Image (cartoon, rainbow, N blue to C red; front, side, top):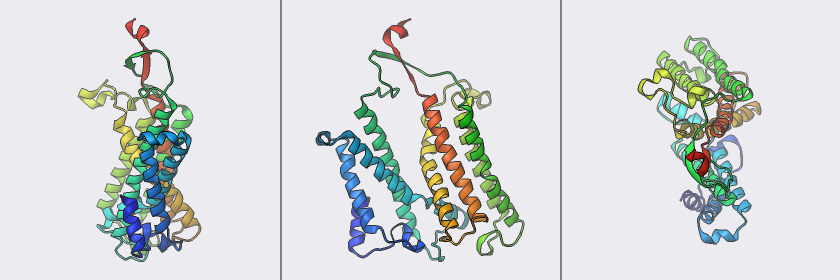
Length: 310
């Protein structure tokens, strides 16, 4: 559907797809429409019988390719969301209202998420592995058991701690800006203290989510959760928000850091722009790595029928 929208827009002469021309880069409206329409055919081939004539690796590569391109195109949506929360509007680099670009990036984020799900589903089905545990085993499965709560490997834990600490320069600079120190916030903006409090609460929730992926209490509810204490944490509960935000955060931080370093965005790499890139990029990559570890550690164990009977 979005590919068709882009195709019509391109035919009508629309030339500001995802705001890329504002950065001095070539227009990609036509290529974007072609990629999405081609990707729709790839997605259909993964679930229809006629797709069996296409090599599974080609379908998986196509689905992953569209997913990655869509997520790269949507990476700046986080910047729009932050601006929307702080100011109630969305603007481009020149200060003009830019709701259309915001909508485009949101659509690409949805497209990217859908294609990631498609690629994962197709890879699992075409590999002939167990749909419950992701492994190959000949024994009949009659029960599902889960591993005991345990922490992530030390390397993953340190990556998670580094991702939490990546927010410190960003928060410190915002505190200084709210205190009235000049030259920190762009265009003389001075955040209100209630905005700062909301930012600290958001970072606190982000840190809580990341630490939950690497600590044992992320697998089983701890004692302070009252009636939930001792119950297994459903895997989708932490993983759903993680995979919704991790790609956007990682790509936004990485791309904005590269563009700021190249002077395209006009931000100082060692100022608030660079601190934002470090915070969101560092946290996003740490979140993705911790999520992969969490998925592997919490994967259900398929028990053969004869073992379950014992």
